[in-house]
Image (tube, rainbow over all chains, first blue to last red; front, top):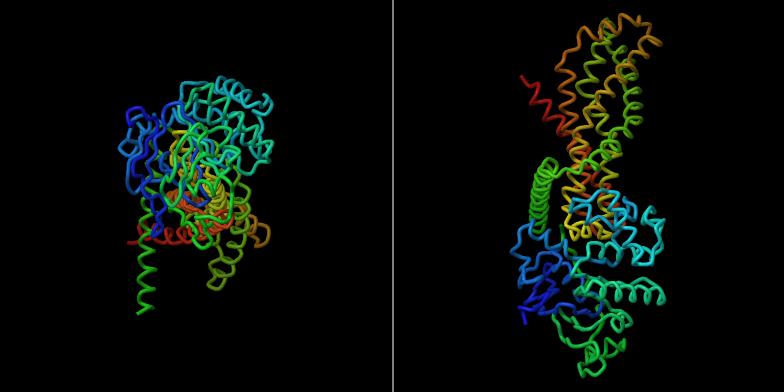
Length: 264
Length: 257
């Protein structure tokens, strides 16, 4: 299983002070899969994603991307690996000091070997793939609506034709129609690239649309994983409570714990 | 016992902070000089910090020079040494007031702006986004700011020195009855190169501290708008205090016999 996994997590652990957030996460994602990890707010989905991206240092366990253990890579090797990885942030995380086209082509410009003119042309092509027109390229992120920012974020994530893409809550904060448009765009662009994706969300509409595999994170562990088509036939009470959005069940929403943030 | 524990805790957190600042400063210096250098960003910062601080530095220097001439005139008048006004004005401005006042003004402008900008980038995940795009945030954000501010502050202070002396000149010739040519001759004759150079060395050190504090507090900010606000305040307060403390240390190093 490990040999053919594009992304592989083994016994991943992360704690902030006393609070254990990830308590031995095991997850394998095969090439071409669209894995969606679901779970309540505050269960550590984002922390898991940040560990995989190298933004947080895990306390234990291993993370492999394309068979490379990212914990042992040097900065230069990790950057080389990251150039094949795209990431769509929850809030877009667009650089607001740069126009849209420089946001989209940021990775390409950073890698070097491309003129600013070519980078802009490439950005305009990429923007067309997320159904944004050429004049948008010269706007600044603050001039865009939430849905457009998500599109630009998606364009930036796919600009370097990555073979692994991460989506952090791609539809959060959008109206249902715009969310569906974004889901469709994700589906089309990912299929076109043939990329392996890992999405974290709590939006079941998103799950139904883009997932080929689903895993559920609860209490720092993966408590269920399987094909997206099997999700309704599961007898896992946690999963059933979550997908039907019921207040009554084995899970109780966190009311007292606030998640401490990592100090950088 | 609880009081002792409290003192111990604050002392330890002070040491932890010193350690964090030192590490940050080391990384900032390394990434300011190690290639690749983002020339475009460096240029942008040179303009933002240098050019756009000119009005505020010029105005403060002008008023300070004028007030200085008036007060020194009164003071020297008590011992009948009014002719020393030009010499004392230029001495005070080049050695102390030029670098310190210009740097404090720039600290208010620039370290606040840096903390707010980098802090907002932190809380809106833009710094995370930089890293996932294989870009080192130290190289991209911190290095150019620290390098630009360190380079440009001496230039600003030099301009401030000239305008400050000019403020003193206007006060002395318009209000105190000095002759213009005598004032300028006295200013130049007793001015030593070391007066100006020591001021510029201070300016470079203060510039480094201003950018360092702005970037440091911005980089570590957390917790949304409130966190960014706190980072901005901390940046201005800490850079101002560090400027005054560093001024003392550098003065002792350069001039203690």
